[in-house]
Length: 280
Image 1 (tube, rainbow, N blue to C red):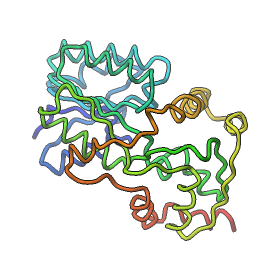
Image 2: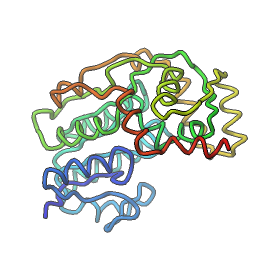
Image 3: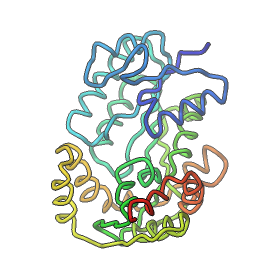
Image 4: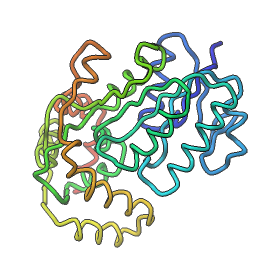
């Protein structure tokens, strides 16, 4: 059984999909998560050594995001330890248009270990597996910056790219930027989800201040509020994040999934049809 590949964040949005991609190729990676054996916990460096034992390649995602305070130090410590323990290659998931994430990329790039950086735009799955799901289920979606164009990318495409570059050394030393094939707005997205799931969704364009206030009223953790405010105020408006790239096409030799395709597939799972139950 092949366990010389470690997938950190192996139960998360992209990580679990990377695990599936590798399993489909007959590779059984080690899953890096607090619930795994051996466990991996970003907040407990004592777990890192066992998780890295015998590992040659690893896929790294940092939760909740490389932009948060403490991420750079954690990536630095992990990269140094991985090199000491004989890891030969690191594939790092990074965020497109995030200055702090680029500082983390630099650590990996200058480590002397082979690497590929997968730099991704915002995920489609944020609407079905993350912080945008709850507003969709309520039927009332209030978001700032309603008209900003974003090349939303599918987590399945990201994972397939990550698994490919993890195994294929021709991508060593490269930054692969992954986006969807189109620029779309939050308003477009909500309309697409409403159509695909055959539900009624009301969209409201609000200010970032109102959005932050709403998160505070919901008593979300301070670090989550900080991150979402940062993503809206710094990343969403960054010109780098508003460009379509062909990274998926280059690596996978096929087109990236459109948001409409994602919405049609996701609607079939019934995840968004809880909307009606919530409105009754």
